[in-house]
Length: 169
Length: 239
Image 1 (cartoon, rainbow over the protein chains, first blue to last red):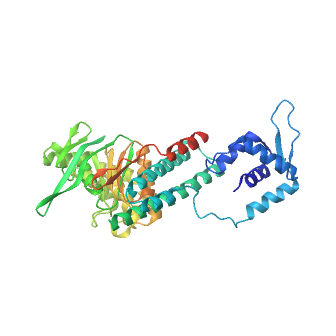
Image 2 (image 1 turned 45 degrees about the vertical axis):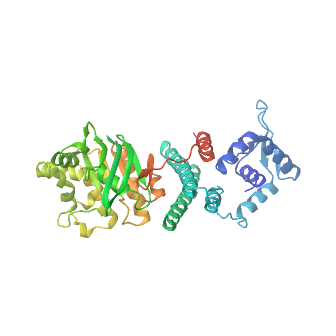
Image 3 (image 1 turned 90 degrees about the vertical axis):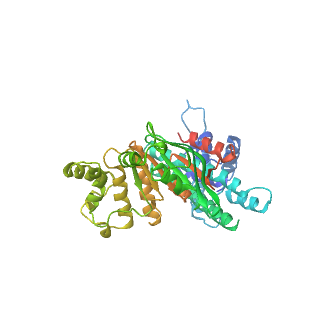
């Protein structure tokens, strides 16, 4: 999901100010960092296109809150229903690094594999700790499950790689 | 508490020797869930057998609480193993002629517990493993997953605070495997030390610590990777 589409969909959920959108975007994309300046730039463009507007907020709160217009809401729904951009898998580069290592003769692929596996295991353990630590909301829980599903799929693939590489050795 | 110190195991192999384990250190504290993972032939089953006191290492120390089992006499080792360590093998290995509750009570009976007391402890262990309803069934009447749960109950019955599970999910389907591993994790959360071997990284991911073995030695993953930093940030952002 591009930043523009994500911001629009986040605002279709509820009005928010720029920094909140930055945090929500990073949570939504599971830690894909975004500059707050980019969020504001996106908001300006969405406003120019008539998809979002400024809210008349609390005069004591200096932060500017934004909300979607009717057209913006329709645009957000259209984006959420559009499945033409289905990704091939997780957005990590686990597979790319291992596949490259296989083709580099003097680098031990198993070392690359171990590093990736160790990082993925840490990620899985962290997700499980979070889900145990408190009673998460449905959205939080499903977000954790999404994270686990991708990490576990990659772990399974690494196991397969190890099996093949050891078998071929 | 279980502590393996520079544990090495060599077997004769034709004219030479084969090293199944090469100076491996592993520690399982009370309430810790440690997974040992690696492909077949990596030495993980040898490690499990040594941790469970079934086999002795060629060199190294195996501490269970305050005793080095590796250097204890065979008879003492057997008693210690029965009293302190519960073992779960790949396919449960229950006695087919005994009911579930009798299977679970068996190690206590061997230790001289009276039938009523052993039976009560066995029922409590079955309850911890969510199979109290199957107490009077025989192994032949249980599914693979149920048999493994009964085997886990037998491993934690009485005062046992340490479970060694060697590929406990090898003969069950994926969903059952996860449920068994979740059971082991919940026992660890209750203070039982668990050492589990597996060849499946996904199942290892349920443990607090993962030891990767390859060719009998612990794999040290490459230093801090980009991944680690990212994950920490993501974790902080969600605290």
